[in-house]
Length: 231
Image (cartoon, rainbow, N blue to C red; front, top):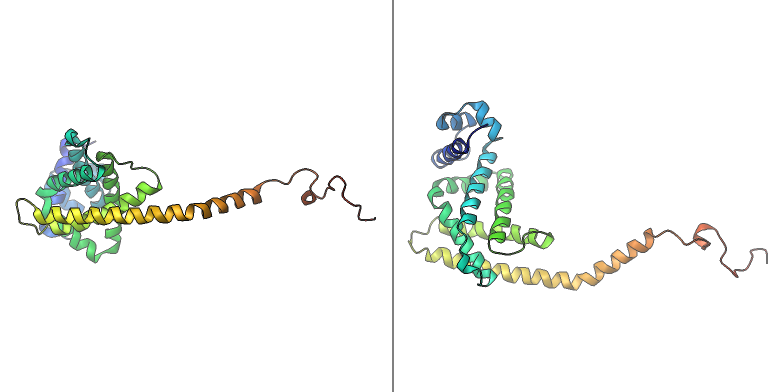
């Protein structure tokens, strides 16, 4: 079992290699050699490069969660989320080279893009939680996926933003959050419109599944006062 320090060294080596060689430019043996660990130790902790990415994103999540600004607690949810996502960019800042290479690789490899998206959605659930926004249930799943896409677009801007004040990045984040609010509003409107329809369908299914009452024609019995077939 690797120590926490060894795990962090492995992740740091992984990020360094991605930044220098690209996602496909190295093997797990290179990570083991760079981190100074045996392959058996590496395999016990990480199933592959995606496992290293998952550990990296988890470290970023932890950094953001440890740095929640309590003074933002009385602010609107949108402002809290803005603050959380800017903190996430601060945590990602030392790894821009690796992130650029990951984005290039994902653009060429749809399967890798799906893997990265799955990990990103998990992180976005935690970012919603950090902002005090409910992150469970069907609606939250849609929100987390939408936020993962929106944040990826913000990262595109951030990677080329040379302004120390990150004016372009903050503007992009504002715009993405505005679009997200509008989109979720439309989604909620459609959900409210369709709710009576789905309720009617559910009642119909329940009625079809209900067992027939004793003595009803459905089970072959005659109801009281019914005429005899021989009459």
